[in-house]
Length: 410
Length: 224
Image (tube, rainbow over all chains, first blue to last red; front, top):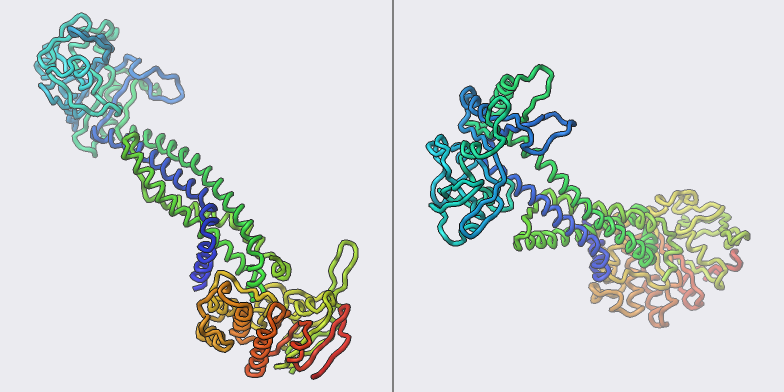
């Protein structure tokens, strides 16, 4: 009841000074809108990255060469040469509950057709690659087991590579030249969108055996075949930890790693990758929000400024109310509710504008944005909090006015 | 029974290094239902005396019994409460809130006393003859009408004491007479005590008693 009365009085005073009220909350409106737009961009980016990764399936385990220990200097991705095709074969033979094992190797190479040439990343793969990476040949076929064992010189083109090399022509059956070898194009991969990290649009897939035959340094000192990475697909998510454990043990045995020594490989699951990626994008989101939050703070100072002016302007009203028996607490509460109502209104308008803005950003296709309930609630709560915080001092000043002085003022 | 009883009330303000003594020992008793006028030249201390009686200002020394209760030592919260329940103010400049309608202004007078009675508020406006102006804002009313709203605001919470500071100072003689007649009737009907500051002799003669103040002291008392 009392709250309702306070709110209705506050509403009266806010709506009698429409222009001033609007100017007061403009800073809060802009601040809240900025927070919502920037945080929705951050959230959208996170969501997009997560969906890119999960589109590959969350049952994946990545085995990479190199030390997993932190703090040591680590070479670039794939720079270590400790992982081999033989490791991969051993995994296939001994580890249960795997539905796919996809070792691969990459190499940059010049690709030449009759009229075009370009530098492309060549990835040597096994037939399992198709299933593990959800790769799909929209035109032609994927590399077969037969082509793999025969070290056939066949190539699958990423969609962008195909367009660059052959334009509108059908590439299937055409010849391309890489490292002085002639390859026959057997298919074109379905486009996965060039912005995603796992895009296959700009690469060429050939049989791993073929690639190793072409590369100069493809063997370890013991004669094993080096691969860049082995990706395992587990048949069911519940086996992930078990498989990770077994693979670690197997590779430790094969690589003769003693107790207490650092592993020369690292194993991470899709979940682990996802959580480290979302962690960093969340940090970015919070950072963006904090930057926008500064403008909200400036808006709050604007509110305090106007509230102080408003206290001066309404001295007479304060005097009248005090003469009628208002306690300091009544006056104080009144001004506090006033400024909280103002900034609450600012918050709501800011949410609407921010929501619209983030929708527009999404609509233009520049960035994916996502407005979530928690951002909206946070922004509105923060703006009310700002009203209370920055309204506190003016309200206190108002409550301390001497009624006789206040009544005398014009 | 005395509603207001002042004994040896002094009030001084520090004016730089000098002390300005506005009230220099005032003794005054006002009975329930009495109408009292305080007269005096400007600067005589009559407004300060009214502020002390209205609990807007604390006396420097002296005792003040309001309805039999000592109030000169109360804190500002307790004073607010007594002001809300027992005292109705009427000002020279009306002091209505410009953004509120007549009825809302009257209800505001009740609110701090913890009363919410829109029937009584409406009745108060009817009694001052403003039943057709209930939803009007102060800017849409004449001075006399505004002061009648202020009277309604003061009496709507049925306080034992009404304090009026030059209630007719801004009004023409016709409106002044109307206001004084309303106040006289209310004072009799509701047994309200009225203390009024004025320098208009005609207005003062609506009261039963007039006291004259000069240099912070009561110098003359007339019973009419």
